Amino acid sequence: MQTKFSNEQLADPKMAEAERILRRCVHCGLCTAVCSTYVVLGDERDSPRGRIYLIKDMLENDRDASQEVQHHVDRCLTCLSCMTTCPGGVDYMHLVDIARVHINETGKRTLADRFVRSLLAMIVPYPERFRLALKAAPLGRPFVNLLRKMKLAPLAAMIELAPDKIPRAPKYEGPGTAQTDMRRRARVILLGGCAQQVLRPDINDATIRLLARRGVDVVVAAGAGCCGALVQHIGREKEALDAARNNVDAWIREIEREPVDAIIINASGCGTTVKDYAHMLQHDEEYAEKAKKIVSLVKDITEFIVDYDLGPPKRYSALRVAYHSACSMQHGQQITEEPKELLTKAGYTVVDIPEGHICCGSAGVYNILQSEIATTLRDRKTSNIRKVKPDLVATGNIGCITQLEKGMDIPIAHTVELLDWAYGGSVPRGLEQLKSFVSDVPEPERYVSDDFIYDTELDAKSG
Image 1: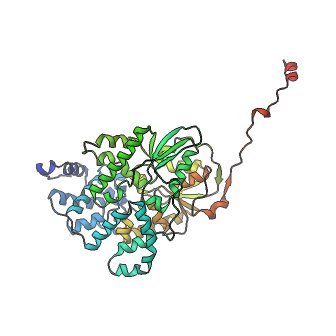
Image 2: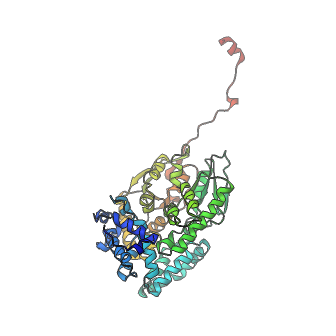
C-alpha cells in the first residue's frame, strides 16, 4: 500500500510505525473471509481491509477522528483472526491500537458513551470495586429495558452479564506464595488478574493446586494488578502503560528476590497483552529492557505444563469436551494444540467446534460496548457448539466463559479446572451434575521393603 505521510509526521514514532504497517497491506482481501464483524454485518468498512483504509486516511491527513472512523473501529473485536490469515504479515493489532488512541484523543463521543467507558476503566480493573459493582447489579435488573430505551444499552449489558451470585473469594488470594509440599521442581509467578479473580476465583485456585501437586511453588507478587488490556482496547494509552509498568516493577522485584522459571497467565486475553509489554514500553528508556526480560518469561498456563510431567491422571472420564479456542489464544498468542493435547492426556474426549476462528463476541468489554453484535456472535458460537453434542465446553479465557455461559445450558469450565479435576482436584463449579461420569483411577499397591523376605537358607541352597 502506498502512503503519503510527511517527513514531519514520520518523526513521530507512532506514525512511523503506522506507516510501516500500512505499507505491508496489498489489498488482497483474504482477511475479510475470517473477520467476525464482516461475516455478520457484510460491510466492507467492518472488515480489516476497510478499517485499514479508514485509519490510513485519518492518520495520513492528520484528521480528527470522524464519526465514520470511530463507528467502524469501535466495532472491531480485535480478535486478530485477520493476522493469522494475512499472507503479508500486516500488524493489524498495533495499527488499530494506534487508531484507538487517536480516536480517544480527537474523537467526539456522546456523554453517555464517555460515561460508560470511564465507568468500565474505573471499576473492572480493580477487584474490590468490581466485586461491589456486581453485588449492586441486581438492583438494576428491573430497569434494563428502560436503560435500552434511554439509549444506555451498555449499562443494560453490564447488568445482564453480571452473575446471579457472586462466587466466594479465592482460597489463594495474593499476594503471597503457595508452596508445594513436595521437592520443589520450579518456581513461577502467577498473574492474579482483576475480573477473573472476582467472576471465577476457582481458576486461580485450580492453577495453584495443579502446579503445587507437581512440585511448583506459585507466587502472586505484591503490587501486581490488572494487565492493562481493558483500558488499552478503549484507547486509554496512559492507563495501559501505567498498568504495564506497575506489573513490570512488581515482577522484577520478585525475580530479584529469588529467580523464577516462568510468569504464568491463565487468562489468554491478559496473556496476549502481557506478551506485548516489550512493544508497549519500547520507547521508555527506564522500562524497555525490563519489559523484554519479563516477556521472555511469560507463558500461558498450557504452554508451561504441556512439556511438564504431570504424571498419570488420578481420574478418567467418559466426558466429551468441546474445546473453544479463545481468539486471544489462537490468534493473539498462536497457541492452538497445547490445550487440546493436555485435555486428551487427562482422559477427556476433545472435539473441535465448527467455525472455530469466529469470535464468541466477548472481546474484553466489547460485549458491553457493542452488545447487539456480541449477542449475534454468541448465538452463532453456541449454535456451533451444540452441533458437536458435547457434555461440556472448555476454554482458556474468562471473558469467553462469561459470554458463553449466558447463552447456553451446556456447562463451561476453564481448561485448567478440568486438568486439576483429572489430576486429583475437586469438581469444578457448575459441573457437579457430571461427577458420575468421572471415576477414580485405581492405585496399585506400592511395595515396600517389608514386603520382600530374604530367606538365607534358600539363598544358600540356590548358591
